[in-house]
Length: 175
Ligand SMILES: [Zn+2]
Image (tube, rainbow, N blue to C red; front, side, top):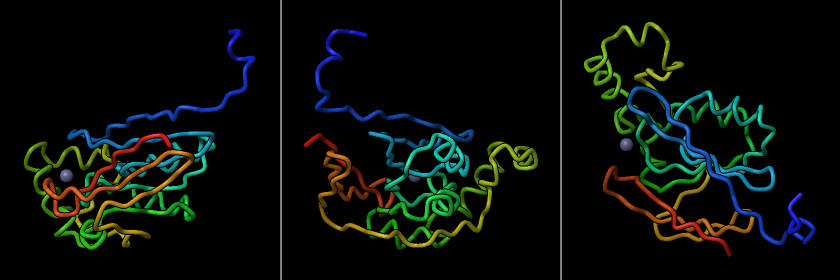
């Protein structure tokens, strides 16, 4: 054991893991600190089992925007972790229940044109090809810069429309 570990630990850095899904590489991130977690985007239903099997308590689901490739796993994760709060920009929340505005219908066609329908038949996308994907609104929305604290970290939420009307970001830092 390194000698420094005899000291009292007064600050634990969060760990951040990236997961990429599908041929278009939609990303999700898991921020972990002291056995608790924040999920940034829910790009696959597989995340629900991954988080559960890891024994993590999921506190928050932060959505960067309303596009379906970042929402494919949201219903599964919410079902597995009903206490987790979903937070995103107001425009994201308003669009994610609409398969036209969350791009599910368009994405379905795009993927079939680009990769062919064979990849759907193989099920490689674990059900993510649903052109009628609908998600319930977020539990909390923001329209202006919003301070959010989690496990001693300031997860400041910032609307950043551009990629989509409901895009948002964070300038997280320790406090
Ligand atoms: Zn997008």
